Every structure is written in C-alpha cells, then in structure tokens.
Image (cartoon, rainbow, N blue to C red; front, top):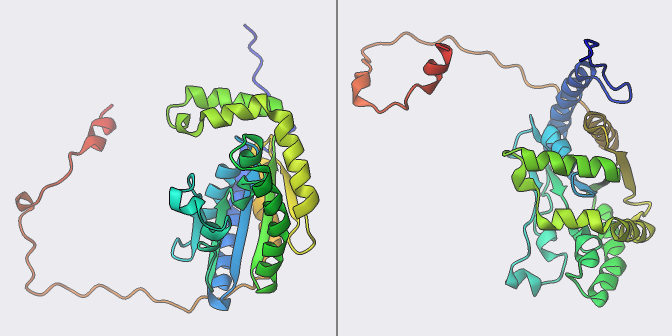
Length: 274
C-alpha cells in the first residue's frame, strides 16, 4: 500500500477556505435579514434542480443563523385531495411572504414543469396551462414589489449517482432517497428536455433563472449565498446599543432541593469517562 498522502482535489474548494467564507457570508445574511425586517421587504428564493443536486444543503446554510420568526422554508408535500381541486398556484401563493419576511422554497410551483410532467402526474392540458400562467404570476409578484430569485442547481449524472449511493449507506440521509428520486436516473434525458422547455418559457427578464454548478457542494453553497446577497438591495442596519445589566443580589430566595425535580439521565458523563 502506498504511503503517499491523499491529495485534495484541486477542482474543489478546500474546507478551510469554505468555512472562512461561509462564516463571512452568513454574517452578511444576518445583516440582510435585519434590513428586510426594518424595511418591510418581501423576499422569495426558489431552489430547483435535479434530485441530489445540493438544494437542501444550500438552504440549510442560508437559514442556519437567520431568525425563524421572519425567515422560513417552504417544502410542500404531495397535494391533498382538497388542494388538487384548487387553482394550481393557490397553495404556494398562500405561503408567500408578508412585509419583513424571507421565504425559501425547497422546490416550488415548478414541480409541475418537472416531476409532474415527466412522470405523468399532470395532464398535457394542465402542463400547458402552467407554462402559460407562470410567467404572468411571476411578473405580478415582481410588479407588487416582491424580490423573486430563482436558482437551478445543476449536477452531472455521474455525481448524482454517486450521491444516491452515498445516501443508501447513510442511516441519517436514507430518508432522502425515494423511488421517485431513482427514476431521475433512468429518465435523465426526459428531465433534461423538461428543464430546457421550462427555461425557454420562464427565464424572463423580471425573474431570470440563475444556474449553479453543484458537483462541488461547498462551492455551490458559497456561490449561491454570495449571489443571493447581491440580488437584495440591503443596507447595513446598525443595532441599537444594548448593555447587559448586573444581576441583583438575592434577598430571601431559597432554591428548592434538587431532589424535588426530575432530571434527565446524565448520558454525557458516561462518554467523558471513556
């Protein structure tokens, strides 16, 4: 066996550079959110792309330090029977942001142009109607003052298969792999054609598609966050000065005996002794 050290792939971002830049960008995201709350802006960011393209990981890093009171992820399940009887966009419109909110869509209304169309979950008539209506809807949103940013995460077929195999071996990510996901392998070309047709109609000046090459997850996350920040016309809001007060001395308070309370078992102490 060779004693030569494993060399890092020069095509991929190093862990040190990634973590340093990610921290800087996440600080900027927090500053951006403060501006959104103060200004009353409404932000919608759509994350689309092939299965295992890295959308979830990017969303997680965007959300990691944001205040969940004014930033949320929308990841809708299969529509209910009642929702199937609604206007297609209705359940998405209900979850659009109010003033001072950021909404990240982990997949979106574009399900109809992708998985629903390719796997036959919608009719040709429903598909055609969607393509006619979605540019109108998005122009209306932008005209009303919503900042709409759309990302397409692009992953190669080899990298996608590699990630699928990795999920099979990982008990914490096995839930991410479904039969529908695996169909994306055998229907690779159908999905490619569907994406091309979707871009042709929905890559509009008011809400263009931005493609993120995501074979290198770390680079994809940095590129996504950096670009997102460039799309929001935010200004740094200086926080009001806060002073932490000194704790006043206790008067006649006596804490009840510990034996009166139930404590969770100290599992951590067992690990410390190892």
